[in-house]
Length: 459
Ligand SMILES: Nc1ncnc2c1ncn2[C@@H]1O[C@H](COP(=O)(O)OP(=O)(O)OP(=O)(O)O)[C@@H](O)[C@H]1O
Ligand SMILES: [Mg+2]
Image (cartoon, rainbow, N blue to C red):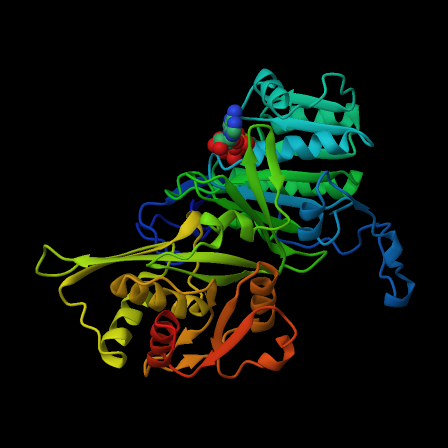
């Protein structure tokens, strides 16, 4: 007879305590600990167990046995390291409404041409999925794309046993429950137990499985953090609600690197990957205007051109306002202080607003120079005379410091037709001599400002 015990588990991070506590010592969240019934069979290990398993010599293992399944999209395959590994368990996590069900239905549609795909929806009805399928232009005659609206894990497993799909999608793990557990739906105990059972099914039957996990800021529903140890691959779906672009990045991958990101655009007929993401974030086709400069952002293996805009104006308040959108606020304050101390500006009576265009977010130091030059360009009401990109970190003494992946940043600027690229002095500009872009290196912020003035007065 299993011994019935209870533990107090943090619904945010999974920390377990033997008694109730108000604040989780692990994640420091208040009021997230709740009681869950657990049962334990025995503390003793059975060492005489019969098994078919054995150790293998490294030399005996043949990597060609690792089979991969290509999805509908090569960008998506790239972040997985070349496609879904057969029999692996993948977690797709993201905020509500970001497009998780959309991309999974697109994947299911693509794969169903060559294999049997089961899509289990625990949150919607099969008709809702069919409606989405219509929007995504999925053909009506799909025999190999099976839909099931169910959230009882036992029912799901027995139907999977009957249908024997090759690829399984479970949307979402928080909505599925195991009736053998007494804890409530969506609790950490339920989510963990369901995920463990799904892992066993996926490995035993070689069914490649994707589970959806909701990211919840309140922590009432178990977040996918506790699942990250269980699954083989974690894909994070990110994006801005008010913009159409989405980013998928692998934050964990047992079968590939985690340096890859893929950009998608949410269109009427689904998510479409963007091979050249820079084009999304550049407004007005690189026309120069006062208060706007261009720079580069490196995200995983991708380099994107981004636009930084600044607005500087007289303040009606005794303490002037500083606002930053998509940029690190403290970094912007630091750059303003450097401009005041090292370049002789006085912003004590001026409001400053700085914005990274297109809903992008980055706290990379490489954007410093662009932020500073956008502010200067707005104050002087003078745009850069040519299509210029600014790359460099600004130190507290006003010096321009080298940044990571400078070569790929310069290459992206050249590719997009920038006439002038301002870079830190350590950059090997000889490498890019043959390009049509003029590379200028600078030592400090005062030099960058004087070069901006000189080029605009024709000196
Ligand atoms: N007709 C449409 N045209 C363009 N985009 C749409 C359309 N209908 C829905 N969308 C987009 O799809 C998103 C919802 O997608 P989806 O249901 O796949 O998200 P989800 O991440 O699965 O959400 P949930 O967390 O609720 O399950 C919407 O937020 C919207 O951006
Ligand atoms: Mg959904």
